[in-house]
Length: 387
Ligand code: SF4
Ligand code: SF4
Image 1 (cartoon, rainbow, N blue to C red):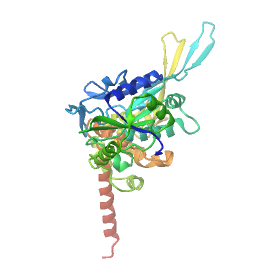
Image 2 (image 1 turned 30 degrees about the vertical axis):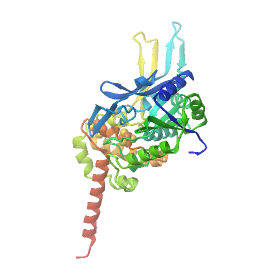
Image 3 (image 1 turned 90 degrees about the vertical axis):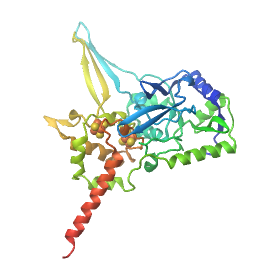
C-alpha cells in the first residue's frame, strides 16, 4: 500500500460515525453481529450492533461464543458465514418464463439487484477469498453478472487479526493476519493503556473520501507501532499451520494414498465444508414451475462437490465414493486450483475445520499425506537398494 495514503485514529465514536457515513453514502452496511449463539454477518444500522465484548473459542468441529471483559469488537474468529453469502448468494433467480392464454412465451431475464454493500470487519484471509472469487466469478469470458454487479459497488473495511483462533492458519497460506491490499479502509483494533481505539488506513481513493467524512485524529507513531506489534503477535499465535511443502506436488503424488480410505471412513459427505468455505463457488441450476403450467423460473443455487449429483454424467456419478469426493475437494483446493485460477483455493480461514461435524481438519490431512509419501518413498528406496 502506498505510504501517501492517510492513516488516522478512530475512537468508539469514530466507529459509530463510520457506519453512519457509509449508510449516508447509500451503502447497505453488513458486519459481524451476535445471533443464534454465533457471530454472523448481517445488515447493521449502527455500530452498537457489532459484537462488543464477544470472542470465540474454536476447535475442530467446535465453535463457542465467549464473553470478553475488555469490550473488544473484532476479537472473534471467522463465523459460519463468509462474505460470499452477499456477493454470491446461496440462491438467485436467473430468469422466468410466462405463457400467455394465446400460447405466446415471454422470457424475462432477472436484472442483478443494485445493492451497494459496505462490508465492515473483513478479515485479511477473507480479503484474499474475495480476490479469489473475483477471478473465478467476475473474470474470464463468462462473468457472473450478479456477482460482478454486487462486487463493483462494494466498499471493503478490513479488520486486521489480533486474536487468531485455534483453527486459523493464514500465516502458512500467506494470507494474514495483516491486511496489505484489497481494502478501502483497514482497521486495527487496539486496547491498551492509551484506550480502546482503531488505527485506520485508507487503501483506495474511495476509502480516503469516506475517512475524510469521519471524525478522526492523525495517526501518531505510538499507535502505528502498537498496531504493528499487535499484528506481529498474532502471527506467532496461529492455531494451526499447513505443512511447509509444495502442496501441489504433495496432492499430485497422493492420488492413490491410503489416507483417502481413512478419511472416507470419517467424512459424512455432508458438504458443510464447501458451504462455509469463502472461496467455494460451485453452483447448479434448477427449474421450478407453478401448478398452472404457465409460469416457470430458473434459479441458480450453491452446489457442492460432495453431492452425488455434482458429478453425474449420463446414468451415474463419476465420483460415487466418499473417498473420491473428499480427494477431489482437497486436491482442487490445494493443487489444481493453481492451474485454473493461478492461486491456492484455500486462504487458511479455518471455517471448514470448525464447522465440520466430525472435526476433519485439512491441515492434519495434508500432514498425514506428507507422512505417507515420506514413508512410501523410504520403502521404495529400500526396495531399490542392492542387497
Ligand atoms: S469433511 Fe466434514 S464438513 Fe466436509 S463433507 Fe466431510 S464431514 Fe462434511
Ligand atoms: S478450505 Fe477451509 S480453511 Fe481453506 S479457505 Fe476454505 S473453509 Fe477456509
